Length: 199
Image (cartoon, rainbow, N blue to C red; front, side, top):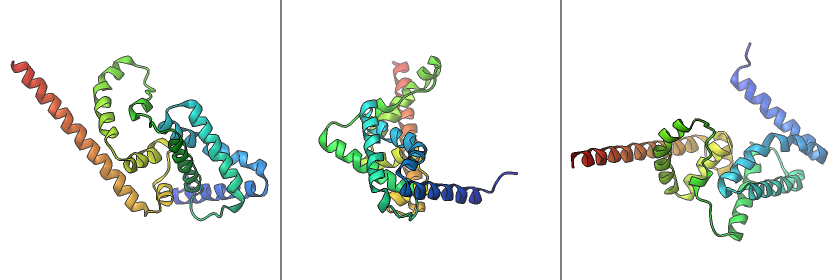
């Protein structure tokens, strides 16, 4: 019989708290914390810098800073929010040192091996990436935290100092806006094709 979602979430939170307490007592136990969060942190950085070497370096710096600050950490919500606040700070440091920012279009990596599928969706992806490139940094960061770093709404809310419902509404409105813009661009393209066929 499956465990209810609320019970499952509390157990996961308790397991996380246990990992953190063990790591605070013995730094060697930090390896379990690292294993749990290394992939989301790396993906977050890779989506921002598009360089495996830079993403690895920033990931290492983040975990080193977290390990050094761990004795002062007090569990008040989500450890992931605390960890990603360090990651965001490291990203800002990185961009202050290096002015150029990576184009979001370069972060798209297709896991789809079928070339026909890639060709069929290529135009739509290109239009979406153009729309995403036009977003401000706040909206881009929300997308990165939710879909690249895989943070929950509660974790994002804690990280950004906002209410969970506000984060959900902001993201859903952003996604609706992108969807509408994508549909409008598609309709304009379809109309321009119709116009060309009449010539």
